[in-house]
Structures are given as structure tokens and as C-alpha cells.
Image (cartoon, rainbow, N blue to C red; front, side, top):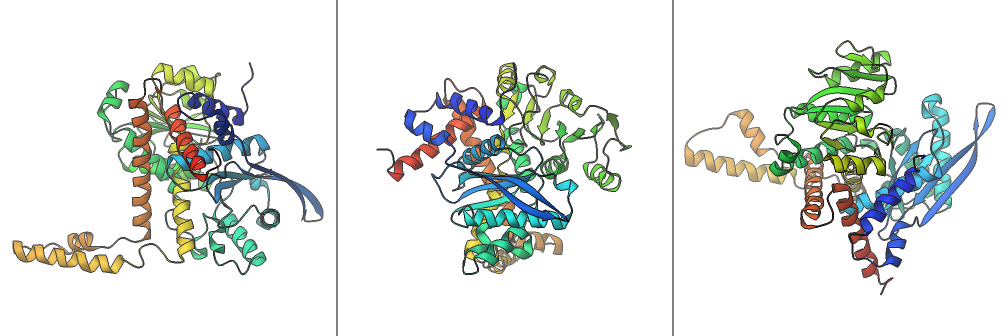
Length: 469
């Protein structure tokens, strides 16, 4: 039997969770459907030739506005994939209480085979198409980076939008993931990977959950395999490594590297930047087939690349006790059912990789308020903390070292507040999902619980809108 499409996988997960919520069939159908699907083709002159580019923008849900979701540049982009990713964004935003509907965009190109000038032409033309059809704007639909895109492309989108709409006071909020100089926010680059770390850290702190898996609490000492060392996988691995985890294998497009004693992630990344290869890294043993790394003995497996990498074909080879879905849709429904019955803890993508959209939300708020986080209160807080320290020193007749004093009196900057807000979001959201499992007689896995929580929140929004009496 052939594997189902990515979008059908998302719908299957939705249908399973729908059995556990008290929501009418009509409202479930509305929540499930993609509200707006825009497929476009447009010509772009690249050199002496004209290339017809195929692109998409899907707004899955309008229960909250604006809609929000990244734009990916990939030769495999198609309507099914973009619809699936848009749907996941809706549920993701609901889970972490970010007030957006889900959306997603994609352009069917290979960005690594194109010049910077050609990519700029395509990105700007795509933005023009979005403006023409009303698919972009701070209160309408807010794109962000995704696979194959980054802050450079977001800056092009912003500039194109502002050229067309110079009188839009909130124009900087039309896109997130921008460079700092273009009203971006500190911490956005590492946000998704950091969110993965915070989510895993929270999941690993419950003694009864870890005992059921045969593990100790906490991140320290746990062995980790990472599949995909792009932006998300790299930062997730770095933060886990800093917390005491041991990264024993990394899988990438050209194979995998394995070292049971641990791999220095920063050295591996530096090696790749200088050579273009992971498998030639001397600090680990090369594995010819990258997917073989998924079957290694480890405590935590982090698929951080593409969808459907764990399926019927390899699900029985998985030996990890925890799978943290850093990518979108890395496990098919059939594989998920098998792993859940086997007792593997699967921390779902719709929760675990929500760090990006959470910090994008912070950036959007910053753009609407036109003021950097921390600017108003940083010095005030420092003066207040200084007075407290002085009072303690006076009462105890002891003086703190210069270093310790600076640590205690330092007021929060933008990145401090971003990290704090993201950690709070990931902790509180995980507790909602976990409590759903603990309080339900029929929900036994975190994915079904996450979907059920999201569906209930979206349904409540629709009901209060008055659409469904």
C-alpha cells in the first residue's frame, strides 16, 4: 500500500483527534478545510531566457487574523504540501496561544542552483502577486522564512511591499524573520531550534514519564541523534549539547556521521562550511546511508529535515525512546501508531517546532508598536535592582564582587525577553498537552492530545464569532 500524501496525513491526525472533542460536525468540517488556496504562475526573465515560475500561498484558517506561515523555496513544492503545512500552522498557533490563523507559501525552484539576482527577481515578483490578490499585510497574512529562505528573502519581500504600499504605517509587520536592521527581532534565527530544546527539556523533567521510558529526568547525559543539520537541527543540537546531552550522530543529505562518544556540533558545522561535506568529518565514523542513523540506539531522535522520513518502511528499526519532531510531518500516521503502541514518546511537530512562529509573533508585535523590547524598562529595572543590592550589602555589611553585582543588576534586553517569552510559551503549552493525556481515558499520546487542544481552542473562537449558533 502506497504512503498517503502529507496533507492526507494531517487530515488523518485531525480526524483521530476529532473523536475526542465535543465539537459539531459542521464546525469540524470548517476547521479542517483550507479557506483560501492561491496557485499562481508568473514569468521572470533570467538572463536571456524567460522562466515560468509555479508558486503557492494557502490561508488555512481565518478564525483569527492575520494568517501566518513561512515561505519555502524547494523544487518539490506542490499544492498538497503547502496545504498540509498551512493546516499545521493553524493548529500550531492554537497550541501555543499565538493569535494567528495558519498559512503557508512555496515557490517551486531550487534556490541552491540559482544566482542571488535571479532569486531576488523571483522573490519580488512573488510578493507583487501576493499584494495584487490581497494575500499579504500586517493585518491580513504575514509570511516568514522556511526551507530555502531566510532573512535576505524577507528583506526583499518587505522592500517590495513598502514600494507598492508606501502609506501603510504597519508595513514592517507584513513579514517576519527580517534582518535586525529592517525591524527584525533578536533571537529569531535560533528560535525554532531553541523551542525544540525548551520543549524537550520540559518533557524530560517529569519523573513518572521518564521512569516509564527507562530514563532519568533532565537533558544531561542523554544520547541524541539529529537528522538534518539545517537551521533548526543545528540550533536544537547546540542547545542540547550545552545542556549536557551527547550528540552521537548527525544525518544529512550526503550520508551520516556517528560517534558514540559524542560529536562537537560546532566543529562539524564548521567542517561542512569549509568542505561542503559532512561525511568527511574526522571526528566521527561515516555512514553511507543517512537514514540508517535513524535506527541507532539513542535516548532522543530529532528528525529536523523533511516530512515522512519515518514511515512503514523503517518504523520497526527505530530504537529511540523519545522522538522530538523538529521538522513538519516527519512521521506518517501508520508509523506513529506503531511507535505509540511500542511505548515511544513522540513529541509532535505542531507543538515542538512552534518556536519560530512564537518569536515571529513577538517580532510582529514589535513592528506594530514601533519600539524595541526592553528599550523602555531596561535602565529603570537596573536602577531598581541596584538599590536592592545596595540595601542587602548595607544590611549584611558584605560587598558583592563586580561580576556578581553586574549579573544581579543587569536589566533585560530584547533577546533576554524573547528567550524568556519563548520558554514560558513552550512550558505552558506542553503542560496543556500533557494534562490532556493525563485527564483523558481515551487519549494516550501527545499528538492526539495536541490536536484535541488545538481543535477545542479554534472551535471556541468560531463559536464566539457568532458564525455557529
